Image 1 (cartoon, rainbow, N blue to C red):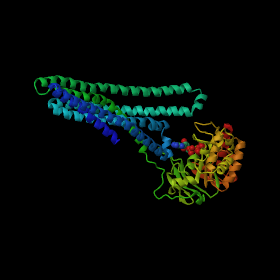
Image 2: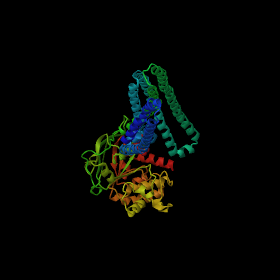
Image 3: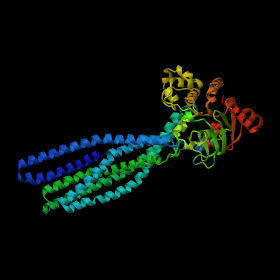
Length: 563
Ligand SMILES: Nc1ncnc2c1ncn2[C@@H]1O[C@H](COP(=O)(O)OP(=O)(O)OP(=O)(O)O)[C@@H](O)[C@H]1O
């Protein structure tokens, strides 16, 4: 960066020497007919020209490398930061807004670093140096040129204030548009099946039209200001020419002096004319940086405490306890969990049952610290899970959700996401437990690429891979959020049989909708009104808790209606 700016500044120095040489040529060799002197000064001008070209080459050569490296570094920092931010942050942010920050905003910032900032420095240096030289050449006209900076300054200040607001709007609308593209790509099946592709296209046209209109307004604002910049240099040049001829005829200046003066002043035309563009570019970069800081300034809240303890999964017994756990989603007044107490003994399997929307997913998400409790605590072997390091907690607690996410990677990479060093035998065992051995019949077996860019798998196949991922390495604590919902009854029974072996040595908390899956559990906990209202074996609850019977009946109805 320093080399880039230095080359730019030295370039200004050498280009300024040429008009000064012209002055010497006109007032010296030309005036006195000295051809030898003309040759030397000509060669010197040539040398300055060559040096200037070399400096331009150095500036351009370094600028792309430097700025692309800066862009890549900020992009990696942004991605890492996004990974550290809690799930609650991602719940609240549209993915398109994040995408546009990582792509277009960073591109704008890079362009400013590559061109805007260097020309801002070079142009300001050119202006100051030229004005100093002009003051030395003939101070009254030098003062006039210096004063021309005042309207330029006032115009650019007024321009910046309005332009930055419009830039923010353009960049935010770009993010909205990215969100629409992403949503419709993910939801293409729903759109097509409801025959809403025209509706979606119209919605997109509207958003894209708003972006176009704001961008046109912004471009027009820039074009309204540009003539002011152009006219300042034009008017000053005209005045200098007229007054300069008068000054020469009155003997205050030599002809060479006037030629040098005008040549130097001509060097200001381009920098002044480009000032509008540079300021606009700078404002867009500032807006882009503001938008990036919206993300960078968000402090990750689910992090390791300073005194957090490492615990090896082998040392975890698996005693999981919820003590008066309360939780509300950020920005939502009502708490979902209002004093949950539940004790799960090491190796025990507890099924969590409750009406839809009562907070089962929310409760199990707290075990892996996808969210932190608002009050109360969850302990693992007597230690608050917030006192364990996140890495060691997540090595001991394995999770699978109803909506399985597969990444654009091979089957093997997807399954070994949490245990990258798993052996082939471990992977085969996990696939067997999850009844996911169909992967061996895929075109490239475990190397088959699945996920968004790969082979499409059915909902049940994806769920089984997500289950294999969760049970890989026999975790000490297993949290399964209805991971068998997409399986047919036959496959579900096979998975349950295989799961039973895993569950013998593992503490498990299973969110269960179907009465058949409840059979996997040693005990059942009923969640209602934000609390665990009953705990016992399936038959105990069935006999003594009418609410439990009602929940199972409604779950059975739902299952029937889905099938
Ligand atoms: N990210 C979120 N932000 C705000 N509210 C949320 C969020 N996620 C869930 N909720 C709300 O919290 C409540 C509990 O949701 P949760 O998914 O935990 O229920 P559930 O018992 O698992 O439901 P289901 O049985 O239908 O899967 C719901 O009212 C839901 O609207």
